[in-house]
Length: 456
Image (cartoon, rainbow, N blue to C red):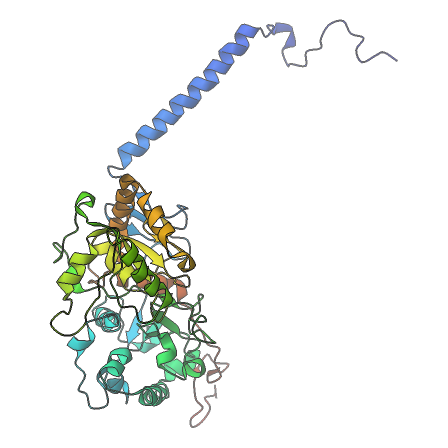
């Protein structure tokens, strides 16, 4: 048998081997040069093409472009994955006179609580969301075509102003829900409730019995650090922004303008009461040790020394970093207020959850520091951050802070528009409830009354 290597000439398997020219080193170098040149020319063309098609390139504020918001000409673009290409919702808003008891949840047992009073403070979002949905183009007057149902109530404000006590709130909610056939149809899954304080849905003591499947809008996430059970469920509920004072969020010129970094007196500040909370007490002690770095004024909320809103924001803007420790609960309004004086928020609340956090990378616009390590090392770390990095965080925060403003739907960017996108992601059609039945001819009912329909 002939050896595989017995041939003295290399075999050429080309189709036209008798015409082939031997491949020299010169040919190899030429081929390599052609490949490299083609690669670079293609890259230059692609770059020129993308720049010519977009005068203002979109800015991505999330780690991955497929799942994060992009800012294009100052307008946030929600990611299509999981949300859809455009908003397409129909929301039914219950009228205050439609159901017995609803007015009490909005104005108190005697109707003496005024809406204007409820617009202020941390719980103002409860009123604002209701008013904005009443004006929304996504509102429908037909229950049968609604994707979702909004139940208006201002119970946090009503409770704070003495309009209803805890027992009355619980009884009134139960009475209201018993009159809602569409609530029973889905087991409450397509109904929306707003609870705008740290207590969350716990304001309604029987929430776990009646609205444990409903969509809850709240600034508070996990409450297991304070209670045995939490009323927040990541898969159905939505974190909403706190209600920042309108004077700071209005279009045009806010009442208090940000200061240049070079003119800010302090490295950091904390503006709030101690309330006996460990993190807040640590900050107050730290300010006494480093008064030139950390400002913690003794805030007065009554009397002649009371801080007005303008004075409060003037203090807030006078530092590069605004410290936001937890209070009675994990969330803190100071986080949102910081964005409007262009002070980098430093979150000192380990359990806090943030609005739209599945599409916003908060690490690009804020800092989160462990509450167990509040001390001099925190100030040393903040002092080590170059001003150019601080300016970058402020600039990125300026792009997304419109998502914390409860402005009109006509605005290209607002908190309610963000909430609508999140609601679209949560919207589902349910028939499976203990009080929903259907028959062979397609008719559906929540109760059997009179004769059962037949095809006779």
